[in-house]
Amino acid sequence: WRLWRCRCRALLSRPAGRLWARRGLAAGPEMHFGFQTVTEEERREKIYQVFESVAKKYDVMNDSMTLGIHRVWKDILMHKMNPSPGTLLLDVAGGTGDIAFRFINYVRSARERQLQRKLKHHQNLSWQEIFESYQKDKFNSLGDSQVVVCDINREMLKVGKQKAQHLGYSEGLSWVLGNAEELPFDSDKFDVYTIAFGIRNVTRVDLALQEAYRVLKPGGRFLCLEFSHVSNPLLSRLYDLYSFQVIPVLGEVIAGDWKSYQYLVESIRRFPPQEDLKAMIEDAGFFKVDYENLNFGIVAIHSGFKL
Amino acid sequence: VRCQHYPPLRALQASAALRRASDEHKKEPLTSSSQQHFDSPPAGPQPEQEPHGPRPSYTGQGGQESEDYESEEQLQHRILTAALEFVPEHGWTAEAIAEGAKTLGLSVAAAGMFHSDGSELILHFLSECNTRLSKLLEKEQKLVQLGEAEKKPTDEFLRHAVEARLRMLIPYIEKWPQALSVLLLPRNIPSSLNLLTSMIDDIWHYAGDQSTDFNWYTRRAVLTGIYNTTELVMMQDSSPDFEDTWRFLENRVADAMTMSNAASQVQSTGEAVVQGLMGAAVTVSNAETSRAVR
Image (cartoon, rainbow over all chains, first blue to last red; front, side, top):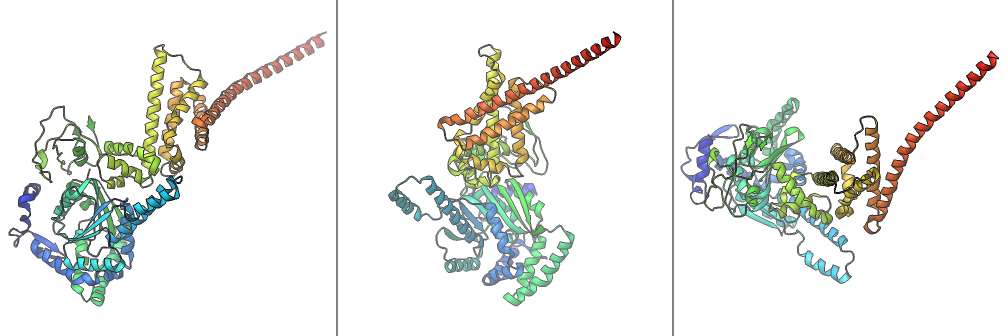
């Protein structure tokens, strides 16, 4: 397994590698799609279709399935990241932009605090100088922070862009169409790489992790927010009950799409648990890899550094 | 150098690449399935010339280990040391650590390795100060041993040591109250107490304390009290070059000396009084006996 992976890594160097993913994989290795077994290409297509159909109702469904708790999870992720102004964030599978908007809010308030502190430092300046420093910093309310939202699905990006316009987010945002397994970015570019509830849908998680390693700057951080394994037996039973009985029904009622939400809960069960994902992240080359369970393991945040 | 580490040890790629200015050494990650003891190789391995490219080529497990291997702890130390120069501006916060990481060429996100309240930065600074103090006292002790300097009397030695240690706080004095409050967080109390006691122990050791009785505890407790109170006085001292603080320190050390003298005086006075009483009793009883005999 390792030898095959190493050879593939060698093939994936810039010139030749891009074609590899498409080269004759119609009869590729068997993969899971929920509880079904499909080939790699089929899986990619099916997942694309799932998100194409749920895109418009994605946020509504998130709220109803998790009873709004997903907002808290994403807030916790942002606090863990604690970005300072000037951070360049890549949000992969960021579709509708939840993480991106939170990032902008966080950085904006951090920047305000920074300016306040600078002002306190300079309390002996004249009025004129203070006013001039306002002008200089006014057009820099984000402190040069930027977030790039990358998603493989055009529909999700469309919904995200509409949301941004609606909520008034304009500066510091970029929307890029791209595949997590083959990012269209240069190496050593980003400070933080996040993937929230997206890595489960990536067909080759190891490739996505390697790409994450590649595009991060030295010292950069990898953060992954994902549904994970609940070890508590009682809670696990309740969670299973809720997942398999309630969620597809909600999907049918609210979004008119039973099968997509059936896929969702099945894919959660098939995804590797916390320790396995941690080992995969370490394999990709990250250091200080750790995870934090939220809600007893329903969701876990994995973090690693490119050192 | 043998380094033992859990989880398994791998050479840091990106930071090491940054440290080497021009060449293209890229370290290979070891397999994570087995914990391995890492030997840093002897000097002079053959450098691997790799093609210039945005991505390093992985050659599997047989990768060349490079000369200057660095562990995660060492990198963290370097970041914290670099962060210290930003403390006067940003305080003991994650922002100072982020700026420090930036000067090393790392991303600001590297500050995420540490707590957001800056505890590690403060503890790192404390241990650095203690190391510097030890080195200073050792150097002075050598001078005394070589006969080039005179041995100071205890109180002057203590004053000198505490003053030297407190002077290390001067560049950060504005933000030091913040640091003290962070050190009082329950999470940090074991480490900060540890550093404090080891520093006091060091000072007494170089002062020549060889007591093996309860004095050992009394002396350290007294010096800890002196150090802490002087530190607090220093926080709100605005005199030029902290003259008031050093005067306070002088008085406290003098008090301590007086007290120890007084204690021994009390003891000897007590003994003398007891002996006097005994003598008086013996005299009286002798007088009684002789009177009875007559």
